[in-house]
Length: 524
Image 1: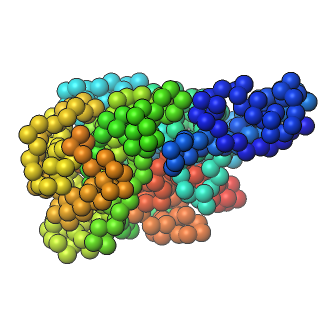
Image 2 (image 1 turned 135 degrees about the vertical axis):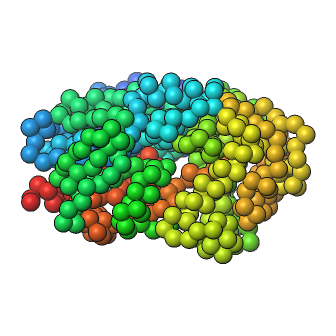
């Protein structure tokens, strides 16, 4: 017999299978020997009270053999000789999952990735961190797996209406992720494990007959009769296809500029901009778990904060417990920071983006930049990044302040230790950030300190600037066909087109686009 049971356990009990079995026996009135094992379906931590509880939903196997959870199988077809071919521009989560979906549907994908494969990309990241030299085509945003590969692998999403979240998680497990991502409340893979998983996806695509080409930055669209006939890459090659998926991510500014130059419809889009805040992880543990130390059975604590300041939202973004702040710029002279965590989340610092919503009217009305139009928000984003780079003094050294000093407009006499490898420089961030963003953050930090007593502290450091939260441009598409209004076979996709925000939602959008275009080109 199998029985589904919900349990409330102490963290030490939740880490001990024997303790779980004993509690199941007590709950069901069965002898311990009758229980052959259990499968976990949901796991979450409740740290709201003085006693911390772990909530588990399991299926107990009683008086019958126990079997482990079966890894879901997928019907990847041989597409070496497929009649239809789809060009996918960008090999981030959207591009990869679109390619895998196309293979299941019997269509040959060709992925064109501007960056390098995982291993070569890792070397470029080391140069960026240690020497302050950025490769515009191989960095934290561009390369095999996209921004997700080296920025953590958080898989939590609220986008449950956009696609099948369980399918996406099962695909990750199929390619090597730990099956715990299937049941944890906030699943996370870790930057140390993602590269091997992304590589396994690429190898499957190639084994099935898909093509995967690196260092192929798209520089032009060849258009005839309201359709894209082919794309041209920087090395002069031309690639033709039956349809084209544009999955280039939120930082492919040259693609937005190319579309604008060719008078292909794009729109300025609101996004959020701010800073990255780093505390000692031990402090966040103490605040969230209400105890001097979290102990061995609890994960590094996280937080989620939001506050309205003068009618404007200030909120945490991409919180990384036990994490590292990384330089995420894609061009020289522009400073961007992001965060990531390894799978164990065992680094001594906790960091999070802390950002402010920015509307087009904010930029236009305040005349922060001199131009208006479809690229206004992109140019505003770039303007702030350039100011941050100048304030840091070069080589991606980041301007920073202690948190209380930041809110009081005081230059910090010194800065605390920080995980950001290129280094920090004390600076007045109110001279880097636009006034409406600085003011919202300064007041927001004070408010967060009241919500989390101890959060507002000079032990925390504020690092500028967190600016790549989402795309500053939207590429419109028809609601039903998912095609661009002007180009019948162009499918704008995921974060770069303004339709996703994170690994899972991008992957789901990639699959959705692949399914839609398959209905068109297979029946053509």
